Image (cartoon, rainbow, N blue to C red; front, side, top):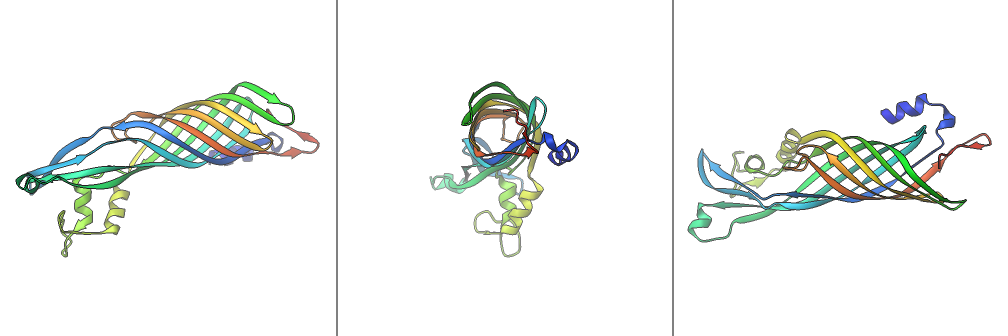
Length: 247
């Protein structure tokens, strides 16, 4: 909405250059292992354990517009995720000296970043390549999958009567979809980023570091850093005989 309004109200001659393409990166963080009581009818019968995990890879797309004097508007949408293990250790495991029952689940988040950024230093080779060092700040929003827990399992593993059955229950995909929708984690925050933007003819390559401040979108963390790379295409619009470009 913000990008559309700005394009609509600004003079056409100002919409001179922009770019779009694909982005990828790695977020750096640590989710610590946790252990909670496994309860049946109010009685503790064992433990429910998350094994923890580190970092997350991301993939997405971006669009930047050079339509405001002195600054650029950058929009990126990406998805990031990783896998982790969880285990259930109950009294039967203990009595028979068996290892805990272990399975895997996925952590995932969809992220939107809107950034206002400014070139700090520029370097160019006439008619061929240009580069600039830039920095920016902005706002972000996120939606993430909750960590798996006993409540989630009881909602998706049910017996023939639809009652929770963690041991022999059948998996209900519709119940999982409903649970994730009702319990999704939503957060918003701020971020800062800085990096290098290299342009060869009409192609863009960018490498930058971003720090995201958004509480609990990564379990147990108030924020996380990420290294990011972009590959895309830059566009110029000519107005009459004049080509406006702040490059």
